Image 1 (cartoon, helix red, strand yellow):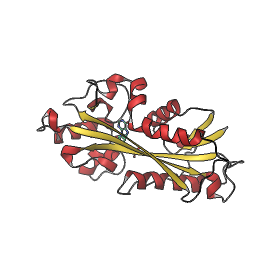
Image 2 (image 1 turned 180 degrees about the vertical axis):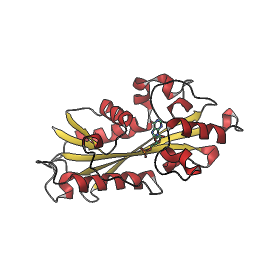
Image 3 (image 1 turned 30 degrees about the vertical axis):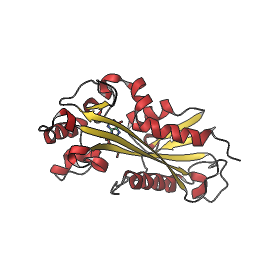
Image 4 (image 1 turned 90 degrees about the vertical axis):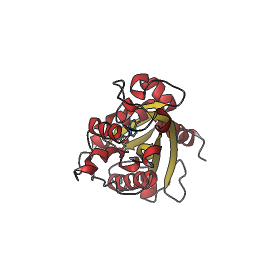
Length: 224
Ligand code: IMP
């Protein structure tokens, strides 16, 4: 059985990841390691932030597991790109509302959503296109200790898996499931928001689901 330590404290993200990744996995998250270092997400790209999270937590975790073979760190960096806002909030999605007040850390979802609606109030439905993006970074604890890994991870020691989900931004929040910008985001081909469609549909279409399917293909392919 492999162990995956997901470098997040976000229980929604963790739930989505667990319900999409198949196979027998021992799951851990940063909720199991409250002493783990805080990661400042200051890279200009999703890939840069995902790599930083994976590498920092791999360094922290090496030495914590008896058997590091088949022990992985999985980091997700994700966010919303809105075309009318030139790709904002992008990598700053979690902190969007706090940028106005110079407040450190993530802002509440409701404040981020309110800011997005305010900035988009003059845009017509045809101008409200957007996409969710997700980059997963997978680091092996074994490779960080220079030991043999069962699933071979050559240089670079971090593997990336990406997914996007196209859609549009509503004029008011709809639905109560999910997290983040879900109440404002309608995926292409649908008329309801992710927060109305619920987990089973979101987990088939989402940016994170697409990236996780690529990761799953890597995990389940034979590694001689
Ligand atoms: P991260 O935890 O630094 O990757 O921040 C991701 C932020 O992007 C979250 O706090 C949400 O605001 C937004 N986001 C990412 N994925 C989703 C999603 O699946 N639904 C809604 N919002 C999301």
